[in-house]
Image 1 (tube, rainbow, N blue to C red):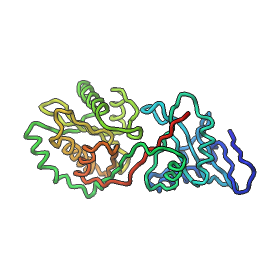
Image 2 (image 1 turned 120 degrees about the vertical axis):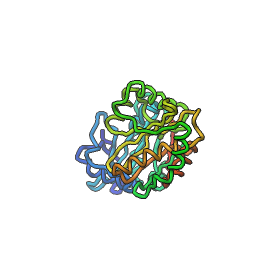
Image 3 (image 1 turned 60 degrees about the vertical axis):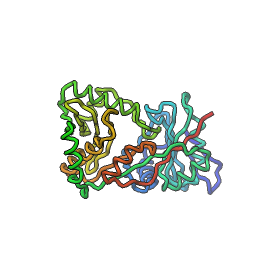
Image 4 (image 1 turned 30 degrees about the vertical axis):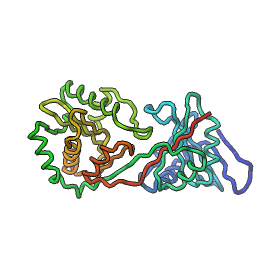
Length: 306
């Protein structure tokens, strides 16, 4: 698929991504997120039909765009990702939208508020600033678990006991954990960016066993709270924190996350990350108590197709 513009010297040529573009695209995408993440060429692959275009000028890739399904959690939406020279974003987007597959009702774009090129484009292109999300990080090397011991002691005396769930836990524990996970999905405020892909009980168990650590709080033996940490080298990321409604408002989530973070620190992890929709005020308060520092806002832009 090639979208060649008129042969005017100052206009780039648009074409499908080739595997030889991977290093240039990785650099452009890393630069576009201000180094917040580092992308390697191995992450970029040619697919059929193409979902990524590049803009090439004077033999150099100057911008790239990808339009692909947003994810199983938002099945009616495509996600538009842009990087590089903002002057090429409109042409790249129009070329991609000209070949939108059937079955999708909207296009979403996600960008942090300080990613200027993308923010400028989405606003100018008529996308709606539909949802806002937050991200936050905690320096685990400075985290002081002792500050939460009084809360944990009060809860312990009231019958609450935190633990790391063993990968070899009995089936009844995995049933209870999955029920808590489902409960959290049903009543937690969320937006397309913070909506996870659906998991079955066995998929969730497999994910935890492979790449996570799960922590639970029991009240007189019954599992009433859950938090999960993804283990990514020196960093851990919170994936899921939920407390049963009958046990909320007592500091159970704060105490359990503090317990999990203390474990992570003891294991040598140095940073913790988390995030969610701005509508989830209870979790914002929990993370503030734990010492997370909120980053700039993430914006999810929406444009209805048709």
